[in-house]
Image 1: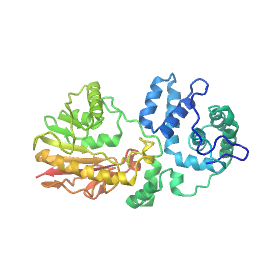
Image 2: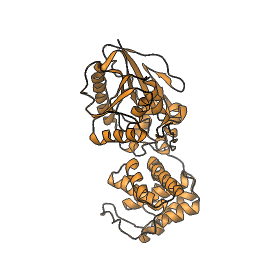
Image 3: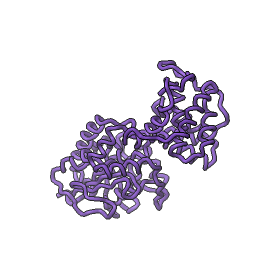
Image 4: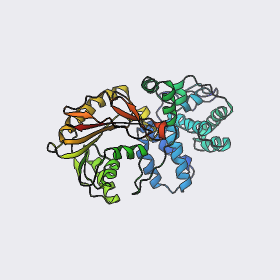
Length: 390
């Protein structure tokens, strides 16, 4: 990206400017800009850094919602915002200026922000030396009609993700799924007060846990599915590999009032006796390609090689969990992605048969399991496969 003629806010390869310049009192845009700098240049995760920053702020509820939209939206639409801006620059600006231009472009093109506010208040966040440059570029963005060079740029995803979705779903469904994941997710509150995507609630319910049964959630953090299953009256044991993630399960179970034993354990070699559980859920680590609207920076982090590694981990989890199920019991495998490689291409565990009973709409048949696309019910995308021990 480069600057208009006559403007040279920075040179490629220059040391990044310090971030200690004086700025006006904190506003939603100021907080959003600071969060985006952390995400874009320090590798911070949006879903971790933003809540922490909001917790320290004095913003009112409306401004907090606006800051959240700006951070999540600008991060999701990073590629599209970059394309909107690049048409009007000639020499490379500093990294901080690039982030600020994307923030302004998002407001103009996607957030429905009034032009005078999107331009004027974004310019105020810039260092005085580059305010003229930022103003000139954003005004050009506001006045122009965009002709997108290709679909991945318009949809704001890496090329490989768009190609993968088209290969898996066909062009029409792929476009619908990707567009759906560019919108903010719905807020779904369970009857016990826990906030959880509806698709995740459905997965937990499809495990079929009953009062008095013993159930293992093998990859349980942060505990949403485990606590949902515990609400049925089943005795649920939650396990997770990392201590800090297991602590999330403990905290959520305690807050919701569920008695939920939590074990720090490697799911590929779980410390439980054979035939210990009536039902086992493997909500496996996956690419998360079905939940990209909830994890705005994930589309820029995940790679095709990551999926190859995850497939191997998932198969190990399936093989390790299968012996823990009692004869006649149920093994449920789920992932918040839409890919066949991470779901239906896995081997059926020895001594199990597929449960072919279809869940209710909007789940759709998908190989040996069932798939939920984001656009089907405005949820995360999921695949679930259920097995019965012989």
